[in-house]
Length: 206
Image (tube, rainbow, N blue to C red; front, side, top):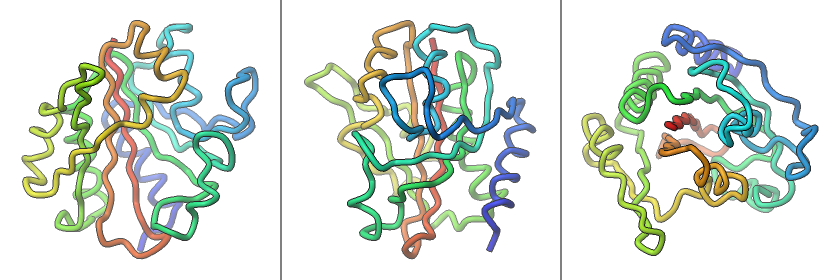
């Protein structure tokens, strides 16, 4: 079994090969942002880019972000020990596209990294896709499902909502120049407690 360090380095090296700039983890104690006490997600340090407050320096970025979830909307304290993927402190591996590639490349690279690089058993993987929201006039994401079905024809799960969209500042981002947003989460269906692997990939198209 690979160590955390080996997985972290393999992830960074993989996305360097795809033209990504590696950036350091942001501090867990957030500064200059009254809306957050702790960094609770990999996207926090890119907030101003998503909102259009600062220019895009690198269109492709990858990182390993240290996160802490012990308060507010993302309070995982009460969930720890009940499933395989809730922790109060963890590292989130993420690759980011700002106005560059989108769903097709993100999904293809997710599969390539998980199956070809990490050698995970594809029969134990499943993917989730946004099922749409009629009340908000949001369509089902058939495009992403179509890309996933080339790898996982029988293990596509339609999710009722994408909770990231409903974060306070993410709503502002979607109302700003951001046109499309995709968040990919691929999990091992049969992982024992505390051995789950989650890959997070973000692509934002303005």
